[in-house]
Image (tube, rainbow, N blue to C red):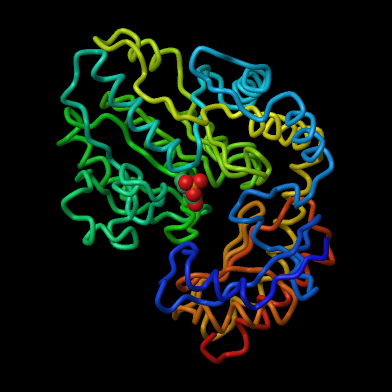
Length: 432
Ligand SMILES: Cc1ncc(COP(=O)(O)O)c(C=O)c1O
C-alpha cells in the first residue's frame, strides 16, 4: 500500500486529536510519519529525519528492529493478550526473571503495569500499603525535590515540580506532599553537606508522616534535563534508612543504559526499596512498565489487614509487550551497549562543546547518551522544530532546552549531523 498522508488527514488530526501538551485551538504543526527504520524517521512526503530523541528515551535500538519484530510476530501467533487475573504466561515469567537479574539485588518482586505514570502510582501505593501493613497508616506523604517529573496522572503529578507541573490549576485535587530544594550539585561537583540540608530538615521534622522519598536518580529529565551528584543520591539513601522512610527511584527515563550504567542508581552504588521502569523496557515498541520492590516491602504489604496489593490493570503483563520487552533486554545485553553509550558520550562532549561559547547559551552538559544545550531564553517551538526538520534532524526542544538522546545504535556520522545541527541552530543567534 502506498504511504500517503493527504491534507484531509492532517486537517482531521488538527480538528480532532490532541497531541502531547498542545492546544486544540491553536496547535503546533505536526509532521506525518510514514515509517521508521534504524535511526531514520521517514515523513509522508518522503523526507528522512535522523532521530535524536529515541521517541522520548524509548527506542534505544532504533526502529523496525528485526529481533523485536520477530518477537512480536511469534507472540501474536500464540496470543497477543490474556488477562493476568488467575492466569499467567511465559513472557511475563521470563521478563520478570530478567528484570530481577539486571536490577539491584534486593529487588525481587515485580508488578507489571501499563505506562510510566501508572508505575509511579503503583510505587506510591506500595509504599503506603507497606507502612499500613506495619500498623503505620499515618505514613501517607511523600517527599521529593523541585524540578522533578514523574508522569501525568494525578498521583504522579502530585510529586512533579509544582510550577512546571501546574499544581495551581489542580490545587484542590492534588495531594500536598513535601518538596525539598532541587539538588544543586552538578554531577561532577565536589560534595558539600549544604546540598542536602533542606531535604534533611524536612525529613527530620516530618518523617513520622512520610512513607517514601521519590526521586529520578542522577538525571532530572522532563523537569529540566539536569544531572546531579551521585553523592546526593547516596546521602538520600542514608537518610531514608536513618529516618525509616522508603526510597522510590523512578528509572523510567534513565533505565536500560541511558546514563552509561544499566540503571542510574548504579552511579551512586545504592539500591532503592521500590524502582519504576518503563519507556525503553520494550525498546520503544509499545507501552509497558514495571514497579519492582524488595521482599521486605512485599512482606509488609502482605502482613497488612488487606493482605493483597490493591492494583490490577486490565492489560497487566500484556504478553505481546512482555515478549517484545524480553527481546529488547536480550538484544541490549548481547550488544556492546556500554561501549556504544560511552562513545556517544565522548562524541557529544566533543561536538557540542562549541555551544558553550555562544552568547545565548547558559550551559552545555552531557551524561551517557544524553546531550543538553541549555539556553538563556526559551525557544520558539514552532520555528526551531521546523528548522531542525529542514536540516533532516528530529529533535523536540522544550523551554530553554535543546537536547538529544539518540538510539544507542546511531553511527558516528549520523550523530555528527545531529550535533552539527544543534550547534548551527543554537549559534544562529536569532531567537529560535
Ligand atoms: C522520569 C519519568 N517518570 C515517569 C514518566 C511517565 O511515563 P509515561 O509517559 O510512560 O506515563 C516519565 C515520562 O517522561 C519520566 O520521564
